[in-house]
Amino acid sequence: MLRWHLQHTYSANAKRHRNKDTLYAVYQPTSRSRIPGTLMHRAIIADQLTTDKPFVDHINGNTLDNRRCNLRSASAADNARNSARPRSSNNIYGYRGIYNPSGSSRWYARISVDMRRIHLGAFGSPHDAARAYNAAAIKYHGEFARLNIIREDLDTPA
Image (cartoon, rainbow, N blue to C red):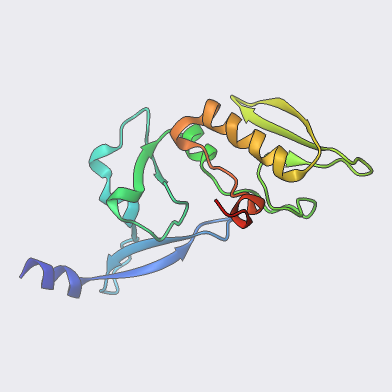
């Protein structure tokens, strides 16, 4: 009975996050009241949120995947570590933490830790630079590390 009541008094929608192209699942009363919607991921793990970790992080990066196993409480810094790679016109390989200065034949890797950039070295290929970033991300960001998926490794048979 309670399940029927919840299904018929609330509706679920996807709402765009302000200033971003990210969608979040929201539930709200179906009546025409002016009650704002509630973000589903916050309601699902509200009991786990604390003052030092008040944010919700989607482990796989899919903001519409609100299974409890995909959600964890996080600090603002933890949440930023697991954010998607920013879209940049000069990052043609799509890897996080690498760059290629114009006119250079080398690829450089770097990672940001506590608002400081740490340079990881110069490499002959973007794939090697991405591997160096992955190792540093695991070292510095731990469970919140967002790793590069290196296409060259996917093409190689095991």
